[in-house]
Image (cartoon, rainbow over all chains, first blue to last red; front, top):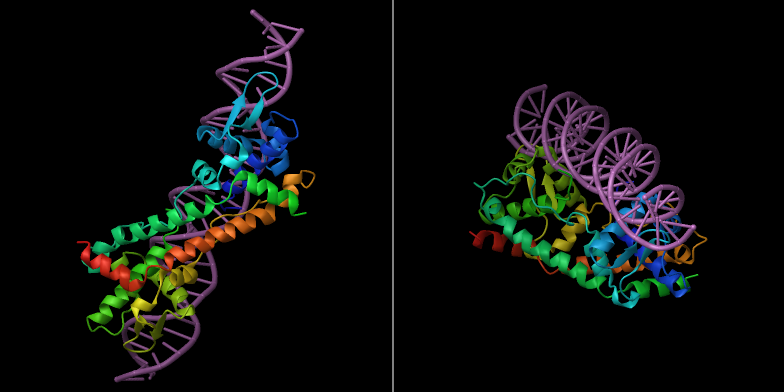
Length: 143
Length: 143
DNA sequence: CTCGCTGTAACCGAAGCTGTTACAGCGAGG
DNA sequence: CCTCGCTGTAACAGCTTCGGTTACAGCGAG
């Protein structure tokens, strides 16, 4: 049960909001979003809250409340979604300080930090190549 | 304490083996490797075991036993190390099957699988640009 | 045969994530 | 101004993963 499905949940929610809007539904409640993803409504609200803080969705309160996209789906790259829901970095350095009597132990951390930063950037660039509109389009045709 | 430092530990071990070899030490014991990384010897052995299964290091048994690189350090890209010690994939799909009554729920999984596969490949390509020899060189000069 | 090191299994504690319950806050509509 | 539905968040349980630790069997050079 313990893996990073946060990006999956967020992308699913955004794609569903985009499709609902195209069908004339201006807003969806968190329960409706959760029902499509098949997760607990609180999970959906947590994800939607992350997306709201990142400015990707907006919420309406009161009677007839619900969520809607804050931008056209073609202008939401997955890299933005990833940033919005991002958990811990992919790679971690040593938990405990390496042995500084060893020449490798003294200099390896900045060297690895550079490599890991480059790897995260590469990931980010790759995710930027796909938008929510792309995901929605491929989901609908892949049937 | 719960992050992926496995790649860090493996790269550190390989760089230390490379440096020791350059200094005339043909093999290192797992205790010596662990002392430099400052981790428990069993952790070092688990990592070295992964690297041995991937053909990156070799082990000598009996008296005078120890570990040594199976290839020159310049021919060990970090992508190979990553493959050797790889844990779970970066992104996971839904834990439970999405709601198939929703058009998004029906088609989103293959669409996301493709995106995630591309992201992992981008990561792999980026890691392939750096070798153990590069890491060792930068570690020694970054003082 | 001895001795040092390898190779694993078993277990612990910490941390993260999902799932669940519970409850305060907000605002449109009556 | 009160009601009602939905949002927003805290608190907790259960599961999994990871590193840390102990313990022990296996192997081979001398």
